[in-house]
Image 1 (cartoon, rainbow, N blue to C red):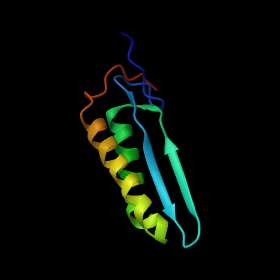
Image 2: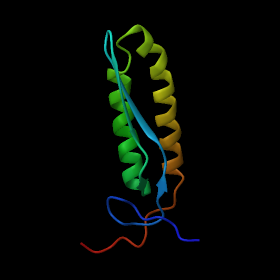
Image 3: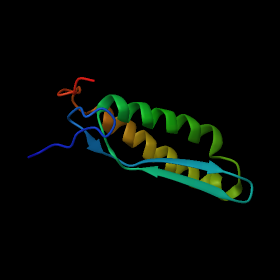
Length: 94
C-alpha cells in the first residue's frame, strides 16, 4: 500500500486529515477548511495554529458561539490524529 507524502516537505507517512478554522463576526461567519496530506510535524503545526486562532476568533456572534464548538472539536481530533502518526522518514534533501 502506497502511503501519501507530505504536501509541504515530501516526508512519509502523511495523512489527509480535515482541519477547520472558524471566524465569528457579529452578523456573519467565515469558515476555512484544509484536507491535504501532511506529515506529523506539519499536521500538528497547522492544527495547533488553527486551533489557537479559532479559540480566539471563533466566538463572536450568537450562531458562531455554537458553531465554534464543532470547529474546536475537529481541530482537537486532528491534532490527536496527527500526533499518532509515526515520525517522518523519507524526507527529500533540499
